[in-house]
Length: 197
Image 1 (cartoon, helix red, strand yellow):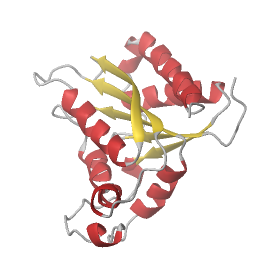
Image 2: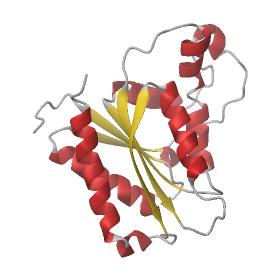
Image 3: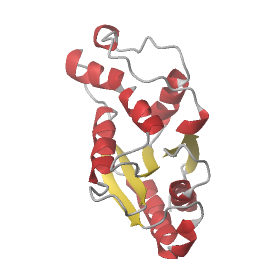
Image 4: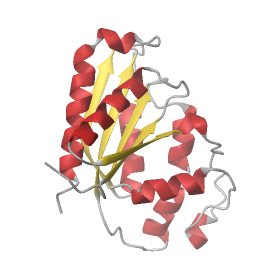
């Protein structure tokens, strides 16, 4: 069992609705992380002022974003994490607007890597937890793909996913008890994966 409290797993709650089904999955996952002796933190994008990327291109010159909002502080937390877990509902086959704005504001990482030529110094494990109501004929794959693209830009290697199809209204996740058990197991797995070189 891991006992290094320097291991820090950051959970990102992507829903505009606090305490909803996807965040309940995230909480279960982070509990699994803590059971393995690692520390956790949660970042709910709905609680922060995240202005959408304007495509100005400044980060391609400097490696930094020029927009003054809450994002720089959130990126500091992202940078300190040993692993990342994103939990989100599925909106029109993808992620909600707030989470997409967060992803788009990761553009400086992309610029540093692909324009400015900075090497990625580490790859951290990452997991995706999706709560999909199930009525969208186009499924949930775009939400996963978008998240994996964001992961790649910040040096996160996708290792685990959980997709729960069905829960819609707040609390519906209670009708899928195995999902929280599985999310907890993913948390344990992610915590253990941070020990890998």
